[in-house]
Length: 281
Image (tube, rainbow, N blue to C red; front, side, top):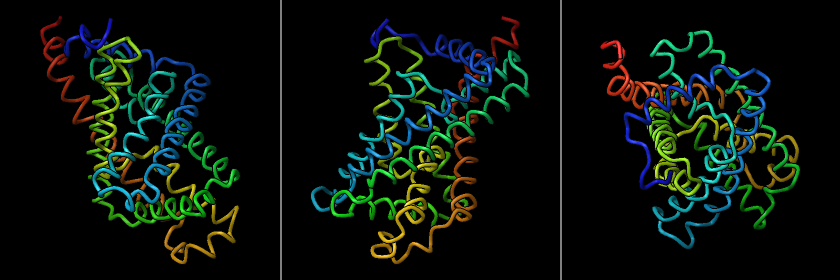
């Protein structure tokens, strides 16, 4: 089956429900391992995106530079979907199986919790490797400056602003995952991912798992290469672990949940699966 003769939306909804049951029933060890992979995959997309946008404003207009960053970031979700991994934001669609009564609340929450932890470990581990590799010194240190600019911008968001950006982001991410369920071809899945993911990055929306890399990579540079930070980033004190958790990761995670659970999974469940349940079909 290819993207041309793929599943229709009602069939995608039933497939999403079946996939949700499978994900919620997965053994914890397997789930955690695949979640670590997803965190690393999204971090690799973030690494690529950082490179793409470094000094891009010197060559490209703002909009095109943002699109370039978005296209590069698509690598992360392509690896997750095609390679096979468990991503917290995409797994918000599992709630459709819960709404249909096919999985219990405890299964849903436990699955999300393990995936979130695994995503954080994968993203953080990748950040450690990137810093040890001296990635921040590429381009005469311009890559490191770009990392810090991204981290400062994210930590500097107001709570409600970060949450709103998180809602918008995961609506697009879950729509990308929704579209990949319509096809079993690799090309179809990649094509389904590219436009929604490029759109959310180019628009400056906030993704909690991506931020598990974007902010820690700057903070870890301060720990592992303090000389670079002292010489090049006078505003480094603005970025702290506490600020990251309170002003970015928490509101963005809440926003991602709202965008994925309510605006995508909830709406599609009500339209395609809710009536069937009420009718006893």
